[in-house]
Length: 526
Image 1 (cartoon, one colour):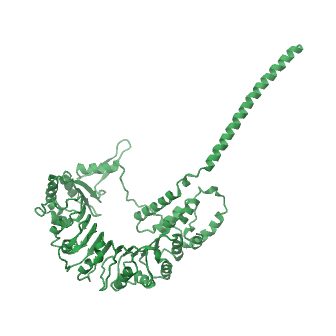
Image 2 (cartoon, helix red, strand yellow):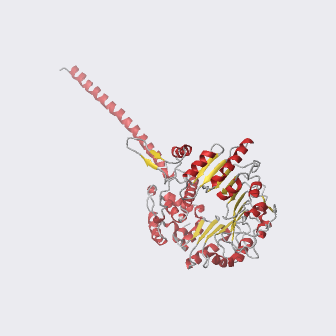
Image 3 (cartoon, one colour):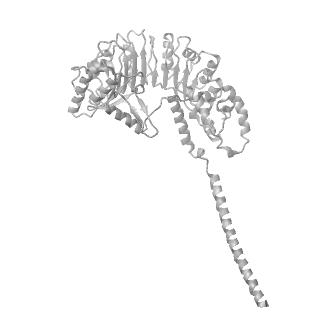
């Protein structure tokens, strides 16, 4: 091979190597570009909060509030405020900080045997200066209870509501409360509700809410209340609930009290025989809701003049001969929603009793409670009245039937539907189906129900409930009370929390299992 040939071979080799290296260089540039892109992506991902932290704090806190409220409604007998906040705080470190630092989550304070002094003190501290809702449940008057009352006595200026559930005849907690706070003033207290006030405390209790609660608006005196001779009613009252006791001889003076002129809601129950009220003598110009569950209510209904009343509930005490049919029909011309029990409905709608379709011209709904086989005697009168309303071009009335918790007579329900559905808009409440339904399903077939006796129109309504998913289960669901740690465990958790503070912040997504949010040491941190 001559020199020229060797040079050409070497050139070809070098050119080939150059091409190979050029490909590697391009590959290197491509890899470097991919590396930079991946690093940028990781930086972006690192800057994004975990899903549990993406909600704005204010929205998250509102969700906390709604969840607590929902649990209170779902489990009214459980101490939701005690255990549910602990479960929320146990989700993550961020949630724990939110629960601890949001005052509105700590404004409900319940004095029960399960609430320790430190637990009450933690709520007072963490609620900052927010208004407080105080709930006191029946219990023995222990040293812990007295100590908790002492803590609350130091912040009476923040009390917004006071509820006492103490249906006992021993020494009630109300007595201890009145003694301890004999000279305290409650400038922010607007709601007071007491389940039972012993007769020997009515005078002191009356002076308590009338003299030392200047802005009280809602007062519920519970059941069997017997007013003292110096019984007082606050001047700014807008809501008043009163259950007459057997010792009330003539409650007329209470109902004629000038302070009731501002009422928007009035609830009366119990036995009030001997009323001395003239017709149209009790003027309540602002009243919008009236619940009447008293004996001998004919005189009372005839005496009340309430031109703005929109909601009227009338439930009889049973065994009465005269429910005041004429007074019921002619009173309250502005009423829009009426709730009546079976006996009163029968009194009103017996054939020939009510023929004037001008009664209740603004009525939108009529609710009937516990219709039975005897109620069917007045259905004809009800239909006649509904037809009269249609003839004068009044809108179709919403008629709702509610039933007791035990099983109903399905023949009654079917008859009501068949006879009334063309004359009104029907609604049903608390209709029990479980004892009459047979459900079947096969692997290769469709599920089906066997529902005897019920008319087809009612079955259509049941089907709509299933199709739209509006089905609520009564299956027993745990409220989680058994998972709540005791107050004694909280001190140990505080020590663990100190160690956790030294850990890296990368574990925010991990479940944070400390329940020290109510311990005596941890509330001091705030």
